Length: 146
Image (tube, rainbow, N blue to C red):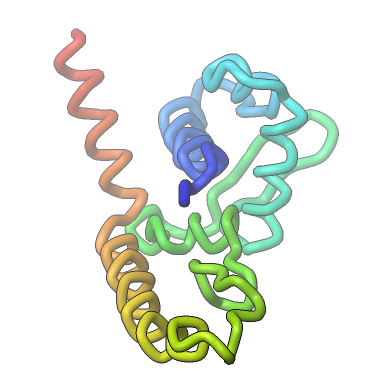
């Protein structure tokens, strides 16, 4: 299992919008240059973030606005916008374990609660971090470079 790079690209997008919002029009082309990826990928992620209500994207001349204070947007919020889980479950169970097999008929009873607990722990941990920590971290790193 691996969360796609779209999640970290989304976090990168928020960092760029925060750092450059007063200096540049932050557009998909601008972001693609920083992230070093295709602007089409950026536009897809921007669309997902916009649909989740996390950002507003100005058409035409471009520009991205974050819709909430950074301390009110958690990594979990971004994850939910970018990596929505199918049927609310992170782990996809194989569809039809053999009920005639003692393992097959019992595997759900053995694993379902454990997998739910693992997913809950991951999601709870993601809720602990907000975008303000990216803001603070970038500012500290940039100050060190000066």
